[in-house]
Amino acid sequence: MKSEYKIITNIIEKNSRVLDVGCNDGTLMEFLKTTKNVDIRGIEISKEKVQICISKGLTVIEGNAEFDLKQFPNNSFDYVVLGQTLQAFISPEIVIKELLRVGKKAIVTIPNFGHWKVRLNLLVKGTMPITNSLPNNWYNTPNIHMCTIKDFVKFSKIINFKIFKSLALINRNVSNINSSNLFFKNLFGELGIFLIEK
Amino acid sequence: MNIKENIKKLIIEKPLKLDCGQTINHFPLAYETYGSLNENKDNAILVFHALTGDQFVTGINPITKKDGWWSYAVGPNKSIDTNKYFVICANVIGGCMGSFGPSHEDPKTKKIYGIDFPVITINDMVNAQINLLDFFKINKLFAVIGGSMGGMQVLQFISNFPDKAKTAIPIACTSSHSAQNIAFNELGRQAIAADHNWLDGKYNLKNTVPDKGLAVARMAAHITYLSKKGLQEKFGRKLQERDDLKFGFDADFQIESYLRYQGSVFVDRFDANSYLYITRAMDYFDLVKQFNGNLSNAFKNTKAKFFIISFTSDWLYPTQENKDIVIALNAIGANVGFVEIESDKGHDSFLLEVPDFLKALKNFLDKSYDEK
Image (tube, rainbow over all chains, first blue to last red; front, side, top):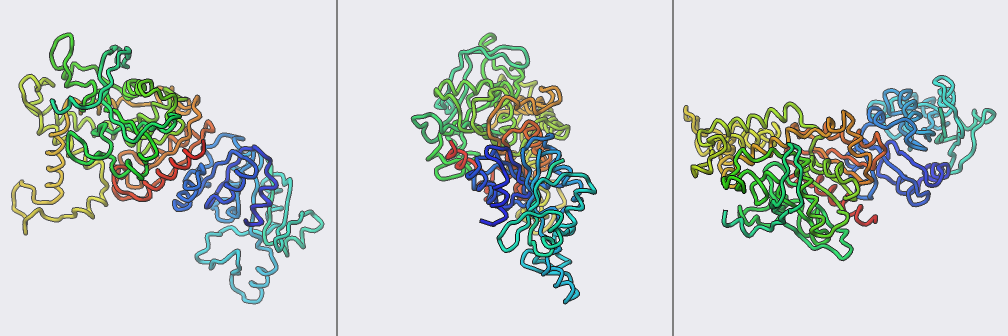
């Protein structure tokens, strides 16, 4: 089980209604179902992944979050989860707004482009960074809108949403991010995990 | 017709008020079953057939002596596993495989109905079939499943009887027949009516059949069930048992020969008037209008778990029309899954060996059954 999934699961309350956007092979969905007894739905763009979810008995819709979230009514879920895919959308702004329309709360995780290894990679090599969590070349990466933990915090002020909880994942350890440690968390955090609300 | 006397039939005594205003009673509903009903009576699946299907879902059809229309999907260890589930399928009313239809005798006039048979709707079809539940003493079906017109019956069934099925699988269908769908059906009907043997539907009296018209109707419809790519790959411009064009109007091309064959075998097993009635039922199907423009309202009383399946190359009931059903269900927070299966076999994909489809169907059913 990925540490990220454990952190997300800890945030989500029991018996709530959850939508997993970009639910992949349904690992998180299954985990949430068994540990938190949630009523959970998923959206996934890949036909193969949808098939895997069906084989696990999960309720998943094949679709593209950028266009297909609009079918859900306002506040139809307690939580909407978006794991490490915000950077892949054409318009992250529209997606965030849609997440917060459909869900009362949203949990967004972002691979941190401000991590020291990424920075060093670019500084030393002078080419676009390739790391374990960002394995693609610049020309074939699906990640067209990379951001840092600090960028995401700034983003909340620009498009006006509230960050309720912000966590950084460093070597499988999770810690809180606040205004005084933001510089360090942005340098050492591999992943930022945010619980947000309108 | 003698051979059809061995078909299982339920005689429905309860009056059924049809959408056209007429009421029918004491009418036959022909059906077939596969597998066995368990003690809890919770493993029953009602399968709805499409336009030219019948109750003989799988195995050898006793009338046509050919494989049942859904042999790929239904049978022991198949997607709809008859070792596990009790499968029921009825011939739709208006049909020609034993259920009450236009080739039956009108008890009042003692003549074959022909086009004096009342116009049937999808709603009438499912209202007739609900009687099967009483007959088998099944309180709640495990699943209702169907493709194409069978999918329309799934939607109508759930709308009419929201607590009578645990799961619903409408495949390659629509909630409202489009202008294009109606246009193709009208082409078929006009082909039948243009056959001089049709005799305003009274061909039975003269012991003749409008087989040419019905064959043309089938040929035209058959094209709509395939995709351009599928046709091109299978037939291309290949010639039929000849080395060169013959500069005439025989079937030079394999595709011509194939369509003529499809038309000719169809007339042996299908009644022309039934074709008129069933295509009409499809054209009249508009669940959106029935619920005043809001499809969600059709499903607002159901807790059924839906699984909707479409096919990439189906241009007759395209993915978007299937997705509209998904959208309507999501709008009311219903439990709905959806997948579009990659296939170049067109609308017919649901009847053919399409592994991704058969796998999804099996997984969904088996997992949902285990969930109880």
